[in-house]
Length: 128
Image (tube, rainbow, N blue to C red; front, side):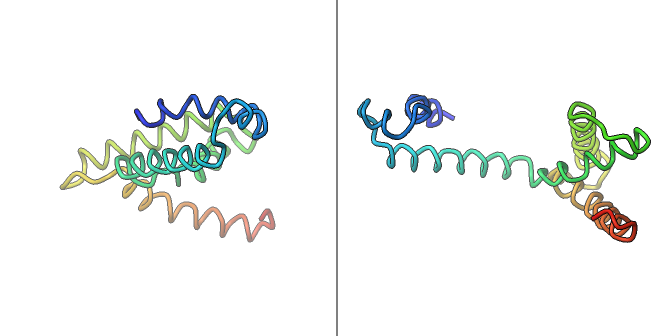
């Protein structure tokens, strides 16, 4: 996180465009590489801490669609459903299983079969 804060000044310069950033004395390629490395490191640390829960983004909208009865939900209901799925998965992973597991293990174990079923039924209905 400190590296991201230190590189934020370079990001502000890069937002102006490559030519303007270079005119301001910023090493464009070096700054871009440093920002990319910081972003990858932050994503890696978040994934290592929480597990691969980005999978929830695939199932939150279909779950919300089924809950609201077929209408296309907005972003907020789908986001709240995704948050609820992660919270329930974390609760199960921490308290209901014999040992503590990352939340990604539980959401993957429950969500992967649901996603496969969803894809199979959508394919049969001709919606894919």
